[in-house]
Amino acid sequence: MKKTRSKAKLTPKYKRILIKLSGEALGGEAGFGISPEAVHDMAAQIAEVRELGVEVVIVVGGGNIFRGLQGSEKGIERATGDYMGMLATVINALALQDALEKKEVLTRVLSAITMTAIAEPFIRRRAIRHLEKGRVVIFAAGTGNPFFSTDTAAALRANEIGAEAVLKATKVDGIYDKDPKKFPDAKRYDRITYAEALEKRLKVMDAAAFALCQDNKMPIVVFDFFQPHNLLRVVTGAAVGTVVTN
Image (cartoon, rainbow, N blue to C red; front, side, top):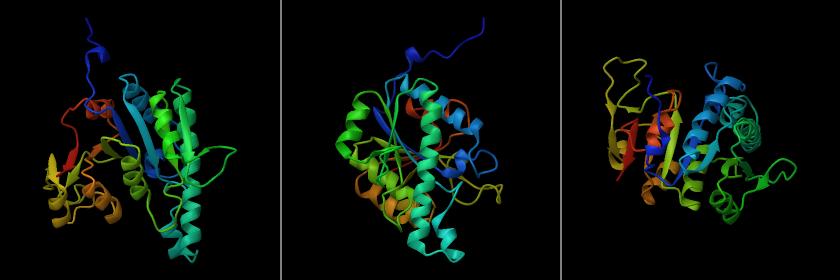
């Protein structure tokens, strides 16, 4: 008889998590635009952990549509480019919300830039109340300020709403001492401290985001979100990806 995965026997390690999704992840294999298949697969994994009662917050990037820093390199004023990038994250948040609600997962989009026709304004207490009611909360528009990345927004929001970990969803199965695509002998870390990551200059998150996590003892889990059920495995404490802690 074929064995099936029994969620009833699984116990989550975390009660409340923040998932940091890059915009490129929503673009699928191409890395740009919005891939319905990629968004559908993400929604399925998120729905899977919601079934365990885990409270889920998501911060999504916008690099699949527009990246402010790249825009400034081509002549767009930096602050303007960053605001354009923030609007791109709102588009991605709405796409993910649509995919989640098609799976009957109640979802709210909260934007750091006021746009009441399509999203609620970010209010910390409101976000926490949504989580307590079992809704997935997607934070859009970064911090609402130029010159700050969505990595920084993820670290900030995770600490604001009392998440127990930041799960950085990537296309790589963890943190390596060098680029595994270029160097076959690259070493993957199972666990690493903040100090070691800084000393070795490993690109976990940008400096501001990393400092926020380090100062507030917020663990970061870097894992491959494109492997089936990997999010569920991380949430239930399986040895997946790389954990950055004190």
